[in-house]
Amino acid sequence: MSKTSIHSNDFVYITLRLPRGTAEWLETCAKANAMEPSQLAAYIFETYRTIWDIAVRVTIDELNKKKEETENYEEWLKRYIENKRTTVKSEKHIREMTRIIKNFLAWCSNEGIDPKDSEAIDKYLSLKEYSKSTKQIYKNYIKSFILFISLSH
Image 1 (cartoon, helix red, strand yellow):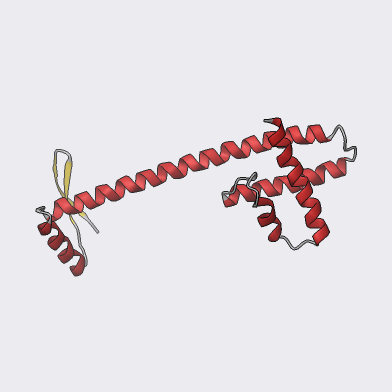
Image 2 (cartoon, rainbow, N blue to C red):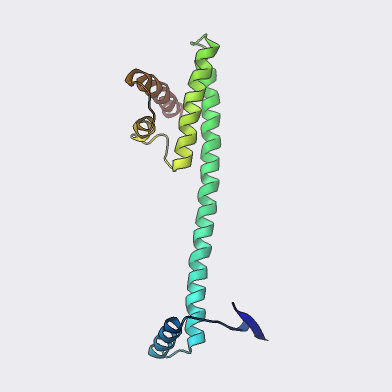
């Protein structure tokens, strides 16, 4: 563990317990770079912290983008179903289509796959243990939804 000992302007002096090999490496590398071991350690920590901050920001941005895309697909699904209601009279059939497409969209979101990716449907269905004819029905429902989005843009 570290122990805070002295504060000075923008720096805090701490004592670190490092494995002997790490401490020796730090001293050797610092000397080779005309630095004090504490300067090299600070540089390494700041570099790591910058990378960490970028990764966290990117992750948060990706999650927000996924959320927006998911919400957009949910909106498209509502429009698609309303459109389908003009030709499909069976409410059971509408519920089945909705469930199949929602499950596909949820899987895409979890896997980080764009539902419009040409291989997404086949990847999704390859994980299902359905008969060939059932997979074809599912594929047709999903493709019809993706086509609806493409034609509506």
